[in-house]
Image (tube, rainbow, N blue to C red; front, side, top):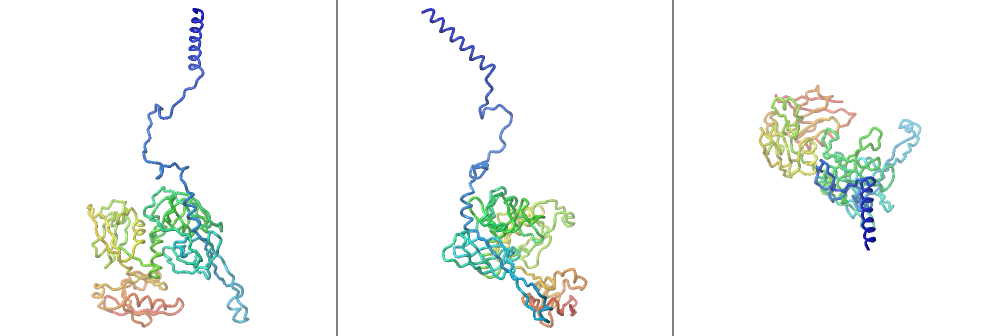
Length: 463
C-alpha cells in the first residue's frame, strides 16, 4: 500500500513538472479580445451604419430589385440631312437624304400609368422617342414637357398594364457618406446597377448656382436620366452629368436632387411650364471690397450684395450686408445651398430666412415671387417691369427697364434706359416685350425706341 502511494505521489509530481515546463518553454502567449492592456480606446461610439451593420453587411439587393424594373431605356431618334446641298437641290433637283441618328439614355417611371422622368439632354431635338422596359417591351413615348435649366424632361408611354414605378424621396434628408445606387443603361447595357456614397450635396457646376448631389457611384454615357436611390429604394436623384476629360466615369458624378425634379415634374403636369420663385437677392463674395470695408469676416453663409426692388426679400426687410445662415430647416453654407432649396419651391411659398445683421441673429418670413426679369434670346437684353419709382423718374406709364446688356451692345448706352417700342410696336409691360422679341430675326433689321431719364427719345437700328 505504501508502495502504491509512493508511486502515485511521484506520478503527480512528475506531471506537475512536465506541465510547468510546457507552459514555460513551449506554449505561446494568448490574448483574449477585450482584455488587451493598451493605452488606446475607441474614439467613436456611433454605429458604423444606420442599421448597425458593417460595410460588408449592407444589403443592396432589395433596393436594386425594386429599382431596375422602374428604370427604362430611352432612345432618341433624330433625322439629320445628308447628301446634296441646298444649292445642288435648287439647280439640279437632287434630293436631300435624311439619315436617322439614335441617342440613348435612361428614364425613371414615376407613376403606374406611364409617366417617366428623364434628362432634357436625353430627348433634346428628338423626332421620335422609344422606351424599352426592363421586360424588353418597347413603346413609343410622348414628350409632355421640359425644363432646360434643371435638365429635366417628362415623357409618357401608354402601356396595357400598370407599371412598376418609384416614388420621389426627400433629397434634403440625404446625408453625406450615405450609401446610394445608380441604376441606368450605360453604353446600351440595360439594367446596370452601381453603388457608391453621397460625396457632397448642393454642388454647383455653373455660375447659375444650380444644386447637384455628387456621388462616386459609377455613371457613364447612357446613365443620364436614370435613378439615384438610397438603400431603402427611395428615389433621391436623377443622374445627369459626369465631369471627365475622357467622356467616361473618372470617380464622381452628379444628380439632380429629387426635390427639384419632383417640383419641375409637378409644374409641367399642372401648369405646362415651370413656376420659378425667386428670393430677390444677389450674393457677394466674402472677399469683396464691400465685405472688407464692412469687416464682414465670416466665410460661412451667403452675403447679400444687392436686393431686387419689389421682390420678396425687399418687402420682407432683408438688407444689403445681411448674411443668410439658414432657410427654413436647411443650413446655408454657400450660395448653392440657398438656390437648391428655393428651386424646389414656387412663387407664393413663404420661407423663414435666418440671417446675421450687425452681429445679431434675426429671422424674417419671406414670400417668394415670380421672376421679374426676362432676357430676350436674340439681342440678349435683360429687362424688367417698371416700378413706381421708375415711372416717376422717366415720366412714363408704359415700357420696360433695360437692366443689363451683353458686351457687344455696351457702347450704345442702353443700360438703365426704358424700352418703349420695338419696330414701331408699343410696349406696355414685360409680356408685350416678350412677344415682340420673339418676332425679331437674327438676320433682319430691328429698330428700338428707348427713353432716357431726361425724357428724350432715342431710336436705334440694329442689323
